[in-house]
Length: 148
Image (cartoon, rainbow, N blue to C red):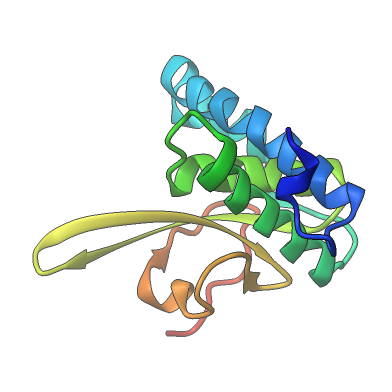
């Protein structure tokens, strides 16, 4: 990876997160195809809710690194599910609290689903109202349902 493509303000840790995400995005996509969604979720997102330290700034930096890796470096087309799996995995590896979320909605008669990761109840790399737009599925160990 050419280090000149990074903004001068980016630190080595940010470059490391972009590199890790670039490697993990195709692996997560492959895991989804070979293992199926349930096993890939367990592998990458663990129990879907990772208890860890509160580090909003670091969590946002990792989210930006995953987004950048998917946009600029990955050969695999990374959709929201793949990006969220990788983001949850990277945050868990760094000991940062994260919650993997899945939601759905119907819009003009069409079913739509979306995956995202939250840190302290705040969506990472998403619009702040994503949890209002998509009804998040509740599962054992997930956060308390949020009012709409």
